[in-house]
Amino acid sequence: MNAAVGLIIARSWMNLCGLGAFLLVARFVTPAEIGVYALASSAVLLPMSLVGAGFAEHVIGRDPTGKDFATSFWSSVASGAVGTLIALGSAAVAHGAFGLDEIARIMFLMSPLPLLWGAAVVSESVLIRDGRGVALAVVPFLSDLLGLLALAGAIFLGWGVLSLVVNRMVACVVMLVGMMIAAPPRNVMHFDVSAARRVGRFGFGLVGSRVAGWASQFGTEFVIGALLSTTAVGYFRLASRLVGAMYTVMMQGPASAQLAYFGRGRHRAPKAYDHALRLHLVLSTPVIIAVAVAAPLIIEVALGASWEPSSFVLSMLSLALLPSIGASIATTMLIAKGNSRRAFALHTATAVATVLSLLAGSFFGLEAAAVARLAIAWAVLLPVVAGVRELRPTGVVSTVRIFAAIALPAAVMAVVMKAMLMLLPAPAGWLAGLFTLAAASVTGLSAYALAAFLVLRRTTLQMRLLLAEASPVLRRLSRQPRFGAVV
Image (tube, rainbow, N blue to C red; front, side):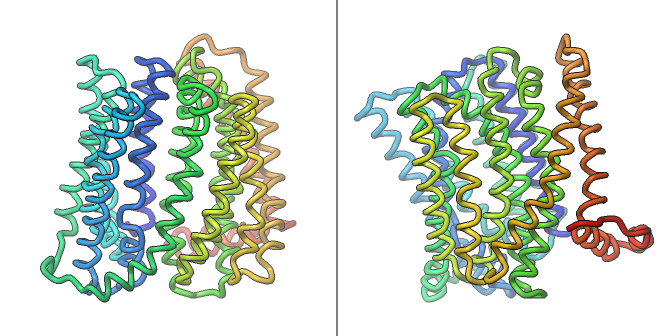
C-alpha cells in the first residue's frame, strides 16, 4: 500500500468517525448547543492548524534523507506549545472579558490538542515521505476507533456536547502514541538553527495559507454567530461538518500526493496541473453532486426534521467544493515549486473575499449566507489560477475547458438523481430513507459514468494509462476499446 492510498484511507476513516461522532451527539443536543461547541472548537482549531507549518511539508518533499528530522520535530513541538498557550489565553479572555463561560470551558478542555498534534505531525510526515501506507492507515484507524468508544461512554454518562471534546482528546492522544511507535524521533538531541531558520522562511507562506484556510472554513462561523444566532451557527456547522469530511478526503489526502507528484517534475507545470485537475474532478464530482441533490434526504435520515434548515446549506457548500478543487491544485503547485509566499497571498485574498461575501449574505439570513459562500468560491477560481505563473499562458483556458467538460456528466447525474428521488415514494423511516438514497445515488452514478466515458476523451485516456501502470490484470483491461469523444 503506497502513501497516497494509505493517506486517503486514513483521512476517509478519520472523517467517517468524526462525522459519525458529530451526528451521534447532535441527536442528543440542540442546534444551539452545537453552535456553542462550533464557536469554541473553531477558536482552538486556529492555533492547531498552524502546528508544524512548513516543517511537515519540508520533511515530505524537501528532506529525502531525513537530516532535518530532529529540527523539524522540535520546531513543530514548539509551535504546538505556543498553540496551546494561545488556546488557554483565548479561554481566559472569553471567560473574563465576555462572560462566555460555556465557550471558555470547551476551549480550556481542548487546549492541549495543538501540543499533542505538534509532537505527532512530523512522524506522520515521515510515513508519507517513506511511502508507509499501512502505518498511515492503521494508526488513525485505532485512534479514531478508541475515540468513538470514549464518545459513546461520555454520551452514556450524560455529558452532552462535551462528549465531542472527549472524542477529540482520546483520538489525539492515541494518534500521538501510534505515530511515535511507527516513526520514532531520531537524533533528538540534534537541532540545526540554520536549518530551522531556512525551513521557517519556507513555512512563513504556509502559516499565512493555513490562517486563510481557517478563516475561509471556520472563521465564517464567527461571522454567522455575530450576525445571526448560535442556533444558526449550529445549522451551518452541521452542514460544514459534513462538507468538511468530504473536503478532507477529497483535498487533503490527494493534495499530499499531488505535492509529491509536482515535486518530482515528471511533466511541465501546465501539463501536470491538467492531469491532476482532470483526475481529481472526474473522481470527486459524483460524490459532490450526490450530496448536493440528496441533501434534504440526507439530513432527514441522519438527524430528523429538527435539522431541516441545514439541508439547503449542505447543498450550497457541497457545490462550492468543485471550484475549490481547482484552486487547491493550483496553490499546491506553488508550494511544490517553493513559492509558498505567493500561495499565502492567494489564500489570504480568497479568505478575505470569502469572509466579506459571507458577511454580506448573513445580513439576509442563513440561506443567503450559503449562496454567498457558493458564489465566491466560483468567483475566485480563475483569479487564483491566473495568479500561478507556472501555469501561464494556458492555465485559465485549460481550467475553463476542463470544468466545462465535466459539467455535462455532472448535469446528467443531477437530473437522473432528482428524477429518481421524485419518482420513488416518500420514505416512511430511516431504513426506507437509506434505501431511497442508495437507489438514487447508484442510478445517478451509473448515468454519470456513462456520460463521462462518452464525453471525456482525455480523462478516459488518462484513466486507461493509470490502469496500465497499476498491475498486469488492469493493463489488459485498459486495452479495451477506447471511449470518450469530446474533451
